[in-house]
Image 1 (cartoon, rainbow, N blue to C red):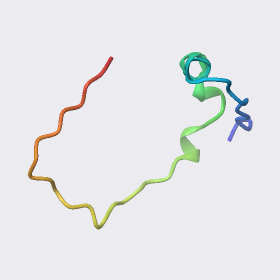
Image 2: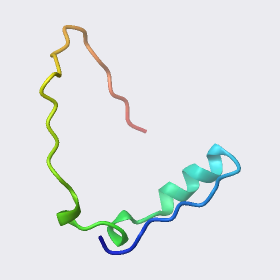
Image 3: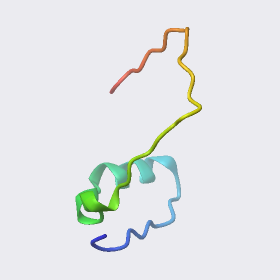
Image 4: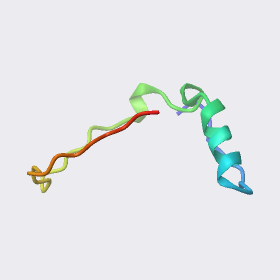
Length: 54
């Protein structure tokens, strides 16, 4: 890890949204910080799901 990520307290969601939009996480994390994750009990769905991007 490069340096700790200290998040400020936010007064509202707009302020928090702006903070995360401007933040460059590459300053705080390195590829070696991440670990593989497994979901062994995850079951496939039979329903359609829709993922929308802004």
